[in-house]
Length: 418
Image 1 (tube, one colour):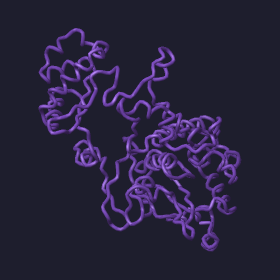
Image 2: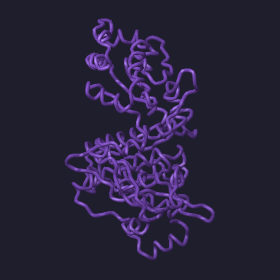
Image 3: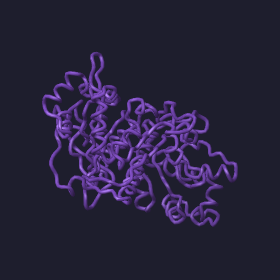
Image 4: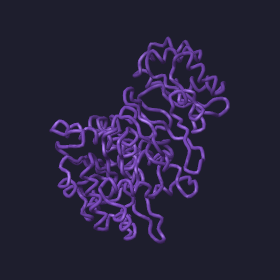
């Protein structure tokens, strides 16, 4: 599917931004996906197919497949223009440099040193385009004793401290069935890219195609991005020697905030940890005595009696269905929700009302749903212009923009460069 023409306001707030993506799998492509969702013209480079090798981003073959292509791909590469290039071929390297000269941002998540060996490191790209912002995502960053070591999101979650505090204290550290480390790094990468573009513009840069301004490297380490989410754990350790441990479904020091089992076995999250909210919660479950207890008026006192409070809430919740629990909490203005599966999310009226369940069609006409774009922009609404394209779908269009004619493009194809 090809891009649909749109006015700048209808194309998203980054409609005049050019991004070159040199990466695969999750962290780099997710960062570039967000920029594409916000309207940027993202050109994603993938390895071409070879005899015995399908080519393309390995993510095309991850998780659930539909006719040989990952359904994840439909969202991860939406709004991107995908081309194939052999970066080891001199012609492929030259095309990357041409694309970099036209780009505002390069996003890459290869192991440190790989692009340098290809002649496409920061020095080469910066020389081609001094105003370029290069976002480099890696396991450990571009420096330090481990910087050349492979590092996946799961390793970042382990090293960055997230796994240590996740799960039941009597069981091994748990992980979410998601690539949290990669996604967290991608969010930091987007924030860093936009901050660097702000600096570029403050030093004389322009968004009208003439560029200018000072470019720089945005160095994102997965381990550091995860560590950045670890709240006050470092302060607690540095001041009091406290090592925060796994706490199951509760959050020590914030009471009550836990999951409770309904009569039917479903789990409901109830967060009544605000002082006024706690009062409303206790009245709602018929424990006026706890609402009136001056020792529980503030969080510090409730922390000391967390087990007692959780037991009271569980006794009340265990006698009711999940829907009745959630309704009672809504009536009392207490934050609460059933633990939602993806089926629950699709049926959720709030998600539906906000357009977070986007209906689309795959190339063969199969109906598919994608998550809506986050956040919302009141003046420059972003939208899904097309789903993740086929391998090399935009080769001809992108290369033609660089000035190559049909014969030159055909020669690149014959030589295996694209």
